[in-house]
Length: 376
Image 1: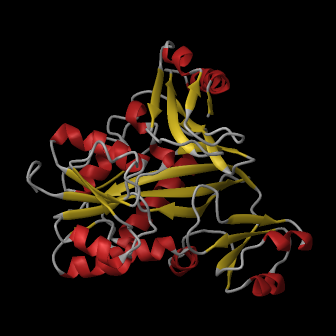
Image 2: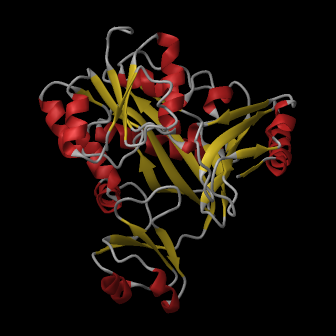
């Protein structure tokens, strides 16, 4: 494909699209965005912006038919329109059937089972009444569609928690006694070239059920690293997917790993790659969907990513307290997403803290996190 003349469209204009555009700018490829929010983070960076819903068939089809390549920054898109565009010759990556598989957690889990990929035991439920009949506590209920950033997941510890359950098609998952959560991001282009990033480790905010800190590289054994890498590459090969795939794992007490879930796009667990790896996940996504050679994923320096979340008591125009102070510090990189409104636990940006020694980066990052607060 030609760097300059290829029309590359993205469904979704959030922070993932924004950082994708920032990487694509290095190659001069025009980027076009479809998003329902004219003030979305990508709107002022793209070459053209179309206001419209990525869930609407006509909006997606009419946007996509003018593109050479179409990709996503969110799974919740109209896959019927994408399938029609594929028939008409538009390159859609990841492919529409893969998005359809992954955005339904029930189908996604069945894929793991059918392909002998280790994952937690599960059952599918169509209603809350069915959940009540099948639940053996404690158990996790997950909405099959529509969940993101910790939403759509409910831990049911006892029968009294059923009132918090979802009255939608869902899956029940056995509670896993795990040691930590890790992630592998893997990319594949049309030529079948595959590159994956060293495993990273997540630490969650217990109140928001969102990643608060991410450590790269993960503190795991070489055997655990090897197994996670093998599974991630096996999945993208079996799917024959083109694009970027984030595979999230639970590490069990014995060091073995099971897949929690996956996302067919750039991912929160890969933001550190901008400073920490030779090729960022955003550039790698660009390279993969354009069928260019994939870049080196080797670590340049260890680092910690801090998610900047809106204060739980504030909604409105964001005020970033403490940012000036942390910007003075060596090895601290601030990324703000340009969102015009903060909300409780909304992702407003991230900070990456690097250091030749991971433990020092972790220590510095925890101090940085204490200094920054997003209020209104």
